[in-house]
Picture 1: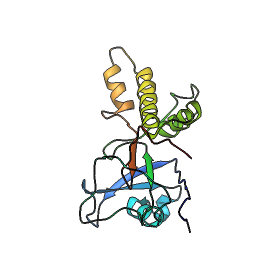
Picture 2: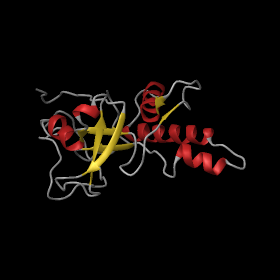
Picture 3: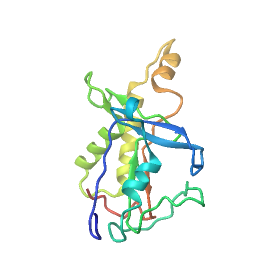
Length: 187
C-alpha cells in the first residue's frame, strides 16, 4: 500500500544464513536468508522472498537517487522494485559471518556488531550521508575487533577461533544507484 513520497524501514536484528540457490538467480550460487526465532520449524526467510514481498512492490517515487554501484545480479533475473528505491544495510558480505559481541557494551551483554554500530553512528552524527554511515559502521567494528585481539603464545589459535579468518564489513545495497557521499541518510 505504499505510495510516492513514502519512506519505509524494515529492520531485522538476528541471525542469517545462506543456502543453495535453487532458482539459479544468484551469482555465487547461494541465497542469503534470515533466521527468525521459529526458523527450525517454519523455515528461513530467503532473500528472494524478501525481494518479492517488500522490495519489488515499491512504486516509483517511494525514494530517489543515482550512483555507480557494483552489480551483483544475474542479468536474466530482475530483483528491483516497481519503480521505488530500496536500500539495504546488511551486517556483512555474502562470504563473511556477522558477529554478536560484548566489545561495544563492555559488559557480558552480547549485541549484534552491525546493529550496535548503526545505532551509534546515527545517534552520534545527525545529518550524515549513506557513505559516512557505512564507513562509521565499518570503522567501529574494525576498532572493536582490534581492541579484543589477544597476544601471547596461544593468541593465534584463540584469535582464529573467536574472530575467524574473515572480517565483518557492513554492506549497502540499493535497487537504484545514487551518490552515497552526497545523499543524506534519513529514517
